[in-house]
Length: 203
Image (cartoon, rainbow, N blue to C red; front, top):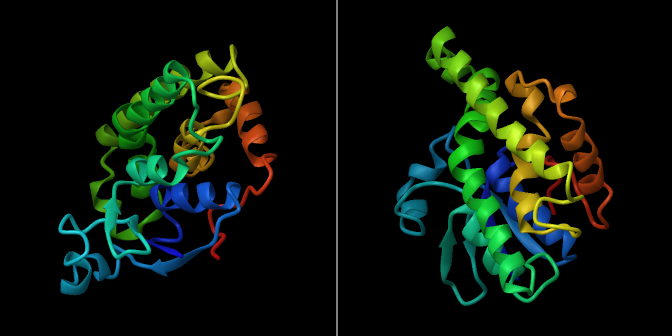
């Protein structure tokens, strides 16, 4: 059985848990948090020198970091990773979009609002900039979701898992999802997928 080290309230850590639930595959969860210093402990740094979660431990003792890399590994050979080369590249495209154009704004603004220790970093100027950039990312998603039911086409994939993780909780960051009916409908489709579990679910 594989082990996933992660924070139960982190969107990035939710991605591999949701993927495993959708695939109906067992795994062990080990709560590991950047908030309590666990990720900076010598024991954890020996597993991941970058000191971040999620972290996947394979049955043979090897480790894999970065949420989307973990997703791609776990989804290999399943319906969540498209078999067609172009469709698979589209899924990769959305994974890169999530890390470079979505997560740095939507996830960060959420963190600044919900974690008290980060409140001092939430200057009005920064919050306004994050709101603008996050809404731009949501607009890109909205444009796609008016054309296809899921981000990489007609079926749910790793692309949807990656972007669901923080989009579904974007209101906690101050984003008004009511402006994006395509996204709202898509969130419902993801939640309706067999095996779906919410962010606070742990095995």
